[in-house]
Image (cartoon, rainbow, N blue to C red; front, side, top):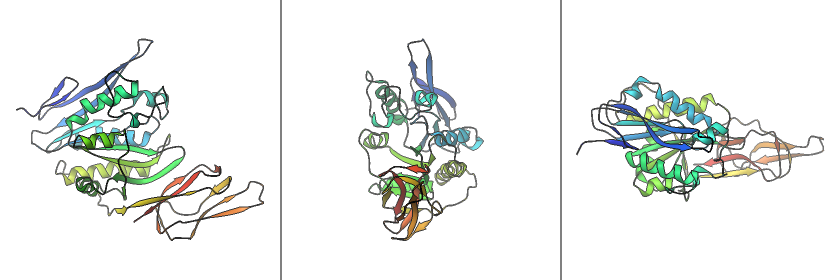
Length: 314
């Protein structure tokens, strides 16, 4: 049988490159929007790897990572296997510069979707049918949300040996143990025997050059380890984190920290403070455990209970 990638009726054979349309969305004003998928295939057999971003419309760092990959010659001409790129999955939310779809649904809680369901459900169905069914494994790019800045990290299940193996090849600064969430792309892909790594870096609605570069380099490391490209890329020594713990605001006020992002902090050490704008109080924040600062709230004005700093524990 011929080794064919078939995306929504578009057939791509070994040695070919093509732009396919995952699905087309129609709106009441006769506006039609396509969601493109780019495929680059070698004549030599090998894995089919997906890089996708824009599951949430305001998460622009991942879009920039995949866009940067899309213009590279080594990506467009793999030595073996196939590279599939979807820069923006949720085009509608991207155009609206918001996380959710117009009906308020989170696309990453709509899987596996259905052909005749809501817009999110239909998008999820088309992604599973036309793209996920064609790959061996992939990387889904995300950022922190609601002012949360995530230090570059890849999330996978430590119970799945293949996922850990891929995460080591990807080799972002931190590898975080993360369970499978109901109705998420990662869980539904796993049911189909497809591993999806989730990369988190930066915050929503803001470019973060460090996270973007780490995302690009991690993709290149993965492909080089798979012998799909021969590009020199800087090696990384990732730190494995088995658990995380959020430090939350014990009072409303102005949040400050002098800790370096990504740094190691010792249990019970002072890692920040909340001060009153009227200077009548100052509340210190302490590390709940020995670990690394992998997430931080960049919002200076916080309310009691807000998540402020995420500590990852080896």
